Image (tube, rainbow, N blue to C red; front, side):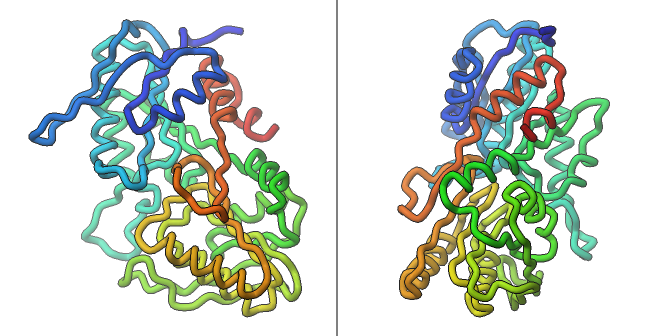
Length: 332
């Protein structure tokens, strides 16, 4: 098999756990390196071994719950690591960002005096010298257009098949698949196809002048007496997810579970979801919430389950390194 160059795995501190798991699948060590933060708040990344002429895969986790550093701190450290690899004469640099920062800030929603964060992050990565960004299930496929393919390519990895099979093995593939809103129907349809389930939609009314709020949710379809799996690509404060599940219960759904690609779960999310779990118990039904390891929650309650995609990601890296088809890997 012809490869671009020998694979080198490097990780910023927040991505080290994922990098180590992927390294075991690839039988490639993680090259020693470290984030260095100075007391004034500046930082740098130092690589400990020769990586000249190699195909570098650089890991970083944007969202790390409970971490003292912000998303922006970790993103700037990622840029430092890219710069270090460039100065170390790496042949090619691919960034592994399971959750892409700013993924939901891809448009201005009618407001003209604000930036488009997705485009800003894309420009920063490609200017730093990144050849490719691998991310899991971007919020909007149009994000690809923020990257100039002459300099940097966005490679979205779709986990629908692998995550769907795992949900089925965990007993979470309910009778009906639902999206939290009409905008999420495409994702819900993909899961419904993999799991061979019916689909319903929910219509969400949101007031964008109040962040993280939902005014009303309506169910489109029949869920009377049926179990429903709600699918969303990102669950942040869980307002939309909770509103969707309560609307499904009110429409007669017997049992409702929740699954997401990116379990950001910030602010009031855990308390909202715990209340939802308590409400389910009072109804005499179970409640489970499943997310992938794009964001890791080590101290989660028993009703939370995490799907690890390190094996899939290792196959994606092997495929990119050998110039193969990523789609062929993710749809197996």
